[in-house]
Length: 343
Image (cartoon, rainbow, N blue to C red; front, side, top):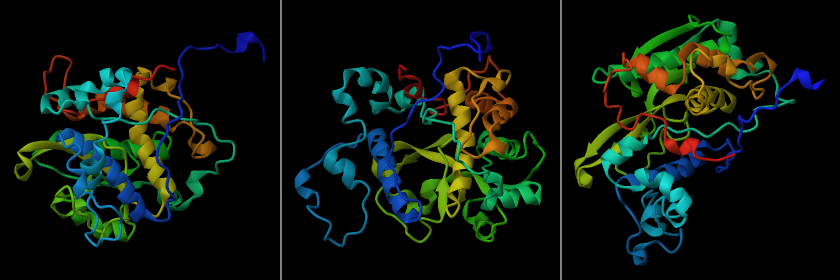
């Protein structure tokens, strides 16, 4: 290959992301670990920091059950270590600050940057479990939780349903059967019979008793996997000093098929990353190819963005916004933190 056949660009399209790694054969354990991390962020948003360490349990022999607020109360919230690094503090300070207005301005919609997207050994995901069943059926069955008070959120769910179908069926936007549900619980029978492949609008902590910040309900925990949140609904909790907590809304899949859950999550991740890459609906063909789901699905990022655009475009279309609108998006904008890292 001669030098005229390629060009060396200056944009890094991939960055390895460091995270907690768990085996996917014990989803209750995965739920406990991710809930612990999530509640570190919640603790930051409500201003919870280290309390009296003398009240912290010294070992795990007590029978008090799981209390997710023990971690921030005993070791501090998620931003405690960030404040020790001035270079990070400047970027994260709008989020660290406990005021609702500042957290809204900073944006909470976040996704990890792309890691290594190549894979020479990854098999064809279209021949595996859920994806194979959907491909053979000829369409995706996608549920949407309808919220009459948030029609824009409902519409975002429909867009993500079509985007997943586009990814599976190589641009086939009509290859989806969208079903409406009034709540996540009303979709459970369809989930457990494998009739519904994915549900948009799921709230992870609806599986927790009244989301009291401490209690954990193991009855449903481990049955479902949640994508990166694509929307944060602000809820005021009178029992904790009227704090506003932003509850994450995600795409929900059955936890038994990790490859399918990862595929669905990738659809959300690619739209958020497209914002940082400066790639929109018109330039969607510039999205990177991906080999993680086999050779037949290498174009999914391009297909998805060419259909739906990046995250901000999805939000605008769902809420019928124009460039001149002054609509208050709250925290539902891409967090500046994901575009911070200098490569």
